Image (cartoon, rainbow, N blue to C red; front, side):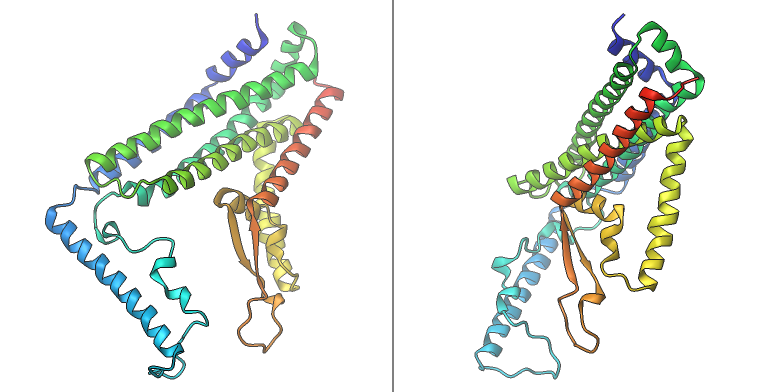
Length: 337
């Protein structure tokens, strides 16, 4: 019997995997039902009022930009002392803004797909990351704890081949399920936007940004599955992976962060894995470090720094690769009984 087929059957037959898929379906059904109950197709009067509000907001922004130009030209004085006037009035130019107020911004109890799609996708990615990590950890952890790996090695000798096949099967199943769930999930809410709400502006820029988030999220899901698999292999039990994550969160992300803040270490967020997770998923994160500004110096931008997706990906790949490599090295040499 083919080893890949055997592992595929073993993975899909696990009750925990089936339970997680069921929970995904339940969460999906609840979110869909809540959205349907809280949305309606806007009437003509609602759309007209929303368009009027959007037009007023744009007009107010244009007026503020014009006023800034007049102040800079000395045509009118600053009315209030301490009133903020940017150094460059281009900051207030509506024509240079990424997105102007739209009528859909002023509709209540109306599901707008273009507004909600990003948040919905983040929710799905978070669940799939949890799914991948837990399934990866339980898949190998249960076999190591119960002796199933030993029985498998009696049938198919070759430790690295067996472990590699297990990992490859896990990654393939998680990837296939993630793609299927994402298509069904976003497709359903797109349909809701077309029938019980509004689709919103669905231009090429919107789909490009959504696709970028989805691609980065899918990579994160697969890395989480490999990480859970690797930690459970090293600890020889599913609980080892759960314990490692809990210990890291409590000791480092909470405890060490507080210590670093107390002793005024510069840019402590750079030492936190959560920072790189956020930077990878969102594309970049902007962080503030007060140590970059001299005391009593007034307004200072020297403490602002950015972490982009590229270094974040390197950190995540290095961590996952190190854990997976250590897992294969330990599995090759140690006693499995």
